[in-house]
Length: 113
Image (cartoon, rainbow, N blue to C red):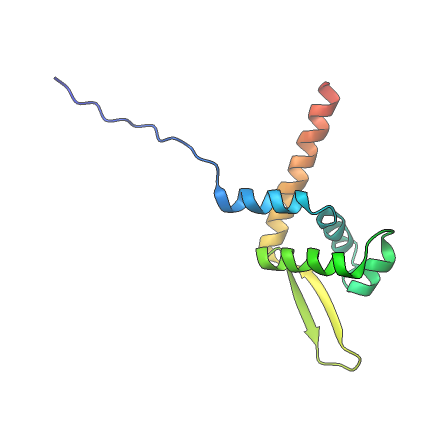
């Protein structure tokens, strides 16, 4: 009797990246923050002033979550008064590209409906 080895592996969902995507979509402000950063709005006070309904507390929670995932990073300048800016990391640029692709896919699906 010939013993055949199985060549196919079961593909599983990538856990870490899936958790990041879920967390980003659960946070209603993450996509807005990415858009602001893309437009050059990178200071927290300026972000809050740019978006109706966005509060400092909610923004800080959103920024912290995105920093924990490595999507954005905080740059602190040694000045008085303190100056803080946020920028997208190289990983964040890749991640945001994937999010944009998901949006394009959603648009295509909506057009078919």
